[in-house]
Image (cartoon, rainbow, N blue to C red):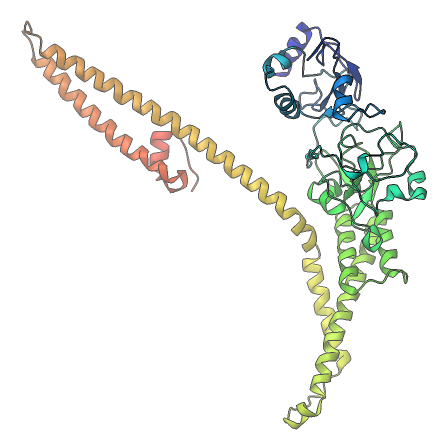
Length: 482
């Protein structure tokens, strides 16, 4: 359906456009008096718009207050469960009300919410390609027993190392932004659950592996965390072109806020230098490699300068490792056993060997300095390839199906014509049979040719790539490149 037709349909329905993050109760965007009279559902619009710019891509549905109390075990806080997708609503209704008519339920209100104005996120109305928020199982944990007590610091995910248990950190990120999407899920903690994969982040080695969003979203500080590697895979961190346009930045999946990563990577360098953090060289290299991935490709002068420092530090770590390897080798060569075996001493300067190793290592670093970044994006690239392959195969299947069915109808019509002519030939009052015999011969010849054509068309069963190009061109209308 085109943009104009959608706009006309929305106008005919006389629906009131909503602003981003607007909330409401009942019709037209949520049911009323379901399942019992007086049960009014709530609704909320999202931030992102559909590609046509007319309606919100994200919209949410709240349970009526009566059902929410039941869901939360009669909690005094009266938290309302929120559904982030039509599928989750349908699953809830089928489970809780197995006799209810799901189609009738959705027909009682309008799921699509028209937008009052374009997105304020830099004019970008195209949805960001990111890993979707996962649905957390609705299990009651040991930390839900204190739900009515608001004066106790606790982690909803049950993580004893969570920042939410640190009063100083909790004050720093106060007041928190109201979040009734992911944070309404049992077992999800904004302070320690990755918003992209929902797994608990690690505070080991200075907590370098994740980032906490410090953006003030208007009604409070966001405070949601994400693994930096998850963000890199999802094109939500580093330098990303196209519609999102990141330059050594992190884009928060929850609030759409952006955070500069230069200062974040500077903290990586300080972690590696700190005498209070005992890191071996392998871990230091892992920390610095992640920092290089976040900075690589940036146009910011500060990011370029920092990237050079990080890559130099990585090179030094490699030199230290190579130097230790050379020392061990020289120790073996200088042992009495080695000299007793008559090994020749070539008079090679160890410093010369070390410098050669440094130059060689520098060349390797220049050639493969982005291997970690490439490895992080391999999964996404493979997914894109498989999606493209599936789409191309589906297209081939539809073309083959259409052409084969058309050929079947053609043969069927020819058989029916032949049957009709043969029936006329058997008529007892027939005086002129020669034209009918001629028609029969012509029909049989035509049927023979069409059967040969059909046999050629059957070769597509092996795939278009294995089918001769002349068959694809003549019988399927496809011009294959050499």
